[in-house]
Image 1 (cartoon, one colour):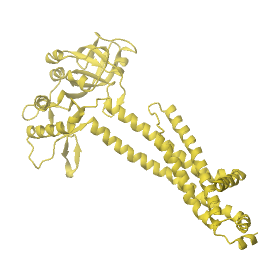
Image 2 (tube, rainbow, N blue to C red):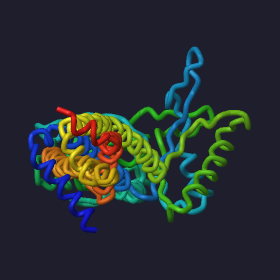
Image 3 (tube, helix red, strand yellow):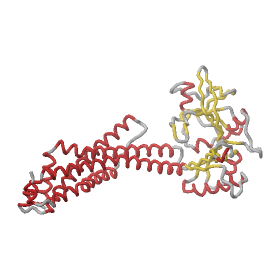
Image 4 (cartoon, one colour):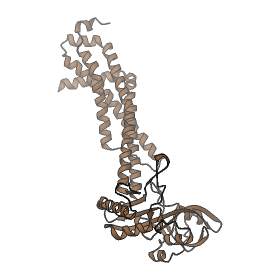
Length: 413
């Protein structure tokens, strides 16, 4: 034990004796570890933010949208045909088990005018189930009811941004009149601010009963007379039924759309759980890719360690010869140089961790939407890799030092 301790002290003394050279040696390690820590932390933070944004829509949400169609030259385009109908939504609600809310959606844009203020916003024609399906919370008033839907009431629920544009910040506009295209509607509610998500922004939209839209605008219909909608959103009793529900909806819609067995689906079904998994998988690949790029700096740093250790062996050839002449074993010489290389890379790794954490924290400070996450696994990995690099790239110089012939070493100038 004493011999090992002495070897470590000797390696430490050699590192401290050449401070500038030691710093320049580990600079590549510092930059590499800092890059890996910062990129992994920022990537994990971005991934958490995106997943949180998706799950805020509702963990049990499922969306059905028009599928692909064959275009000119055999090129497939997404959503170029309208294949979903209000009657599809009603059939899903009646026939598919484990579905608790179904909200057909008909989207358009309109100019909204209130007094001297006006704004352009997306108009969502839907049912009362929309609020429950998307977990929307009210800031003022209430969402329209089934009664409002049944009588095609001229009412509107405003997103937070639309309400602020028309009536100002902090104003309760419930009861106020708004001109929506050529119709006068009454504001009955304002949604709480929710921010943008991968599904769009709730705050920039206005919500009206789908029946009101059908009465005030030309309604597209299928050849069978069904009312076309842009999409259908639904929520499940529990996410464990997602696969079962998807299969049941697929079978139901293929039957209703009269698709041949060999024909592809003319609709797409996507749950928030599936979307979160896809996004998480894509981000994992991106983070690994960025981490691999940053790891190149570690490789360069390791080569720098090996070069400096080879120089150190040349400079200390006479010292090695004297120690071997006095009885030092090859194992002792080998251990000293190997420990010195590992100590250099470990120091660089620790400094790199602190620097990487600082960079990630700074990014989180300036980019409020992302909260970087530095995990214990990342820190342990960084330390292990830095030490491993020192041992790997220090092995050859240490072996070369231990194999020096003491007579030749003593003759060296």
